[in-house]
Every structure is written in structure tokens, then in C-alpha cells.
Image (tube, rainbow, N blue to C red; front, side, top):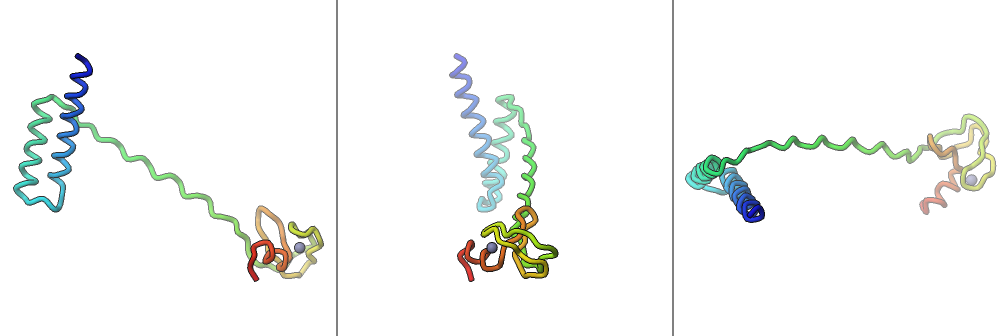
Length: 114
Ligand SMILES: [Zn+2]
């Protein structure tokens, strides 16, 4: 009994959904849209359906920017994170906020670029 009611309710809800979609379809003629809207409202009224709006989900926050690093002149001596040798103060290098410094050659060889 309950499953029959559920199936009938699901069918009615689907029908209302289809009618509303047709009423809002820009390809439908004005008469079709009006008839679909009327039929949807009538079905909602006759079946005692309750129309609820589903609040849109907030967009997820954008991912944090990828810290891919940038070219700098080293401000002080530090160990290259690739080869471990010293990157001297004033030497051009690749710097990443979360990853330290790399010799330019080490950086390019690691990334497979020139
Ligand atoms: Zn290196």
C-alpha cells in the first residue's frame, strides 16, 4: 500500500517537474508554456503537493594558489633543496615560500625544462 502511494507520489512529482521544465523551456511556444504551467499548478493543487525550494549550495572556496615559486637572487646562503649544495647569497635561484631555494640548473633539470 505504502509503496503504491510512494510510486504514485513519485510519478506525480516527476510529472510536475516535467511540466515546469516545459513551461520554462525557451523552445516551447507561448501556448505550450502556458498550458504546461497551468497543468503543473493544477496537479500540485489536486494532489496536495508541497513545493519547496532547495537552497543552492554555496560554491566551494577556490583552491589555494599553488606556490610554484619564482626567480630571486638569494638573500643569504642556503642549501639547495635538490642537490644539497650551497646556494650563495646574491646567486640567482628558484625560491618557493614553502620549499626553500634551488639552483637554477637543479630547478630546470628537475622540471625537465631548460
Ligand atoms: Zn642544486
